[in-house]
Image (cartoon, rainbow, N blue to C red; front, side):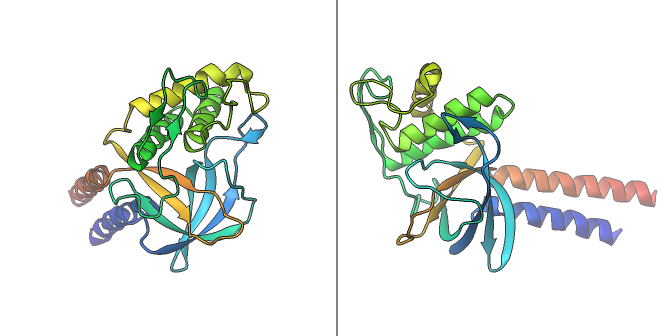
Length: 236
């Protein structure tokens, strides 16, 4: 059944060259939806954006790592994509110092750019794995935002800066520490969609957790094997 083989191969190609593989060059990004989860009076958790390359667009699920900038439904902008492995190219966050008495750390921690995105990757993976728990999603989202904008939640004297988060602060601090202490592992990679410099106003940066290429290859091979077995069964 040649048609079955072609279908399996097509599925493999779609998996390997989907937006999760990180488009090359400049992309057009459109904000589609912020979802329904909220904490602290703002939307948290995965958002939906449309990423278009050479006129071919696809909706993808992303996590916002940028509380500094804002976007609205339907807003479009140009962006570039990068990964930790590719050197983070134009990724926005250059690494920060998480200070004592700001995020619950016993001492100040200075992150490199790579370490910061490794922490974001770990927390993004954790969020995707806990989408059924709104509180966990919200705490992780605020932890990511506070990693890229230290002091977002608390004043330098430790008092609360952002309203409606008091009962979540311990959890948020815990996730900040977890992010700092972990590198995201090798089971996935982070694709970072960063607005091109000069955008005015500057849109947000988003990250996408995707299967690593090796996992996609194994999945594709599995589909081809299944296709071969089905072909034998049909012929037999």
